[in-house]
Length: 91
Image (cartoon, rainbow, N blue to C red; front, side):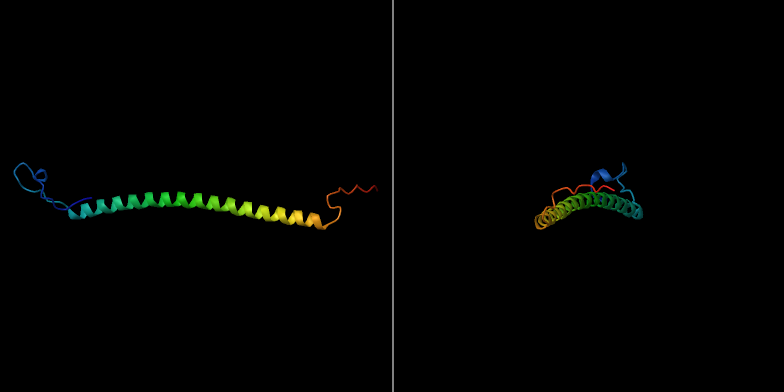
């Protein structure tokens, strides 16, 4: 954190004067730090969202596969002789 004014003795020069600070420069540095932190937060959030999407995608694909296999098995039970192979016709 950048402070524009400090009363610490180490901030004064050898002659005891407190150096003047460019307040605009301090504000720019503060915004640079905030911008960098914001970019890091964006990266972390993007990574987290990507992981959650992958988890959800896998879960949904597994769910759809189980529905498909259930329907396929149900259909096979309804159709008589559906598991037998049909012999190829000769022409």
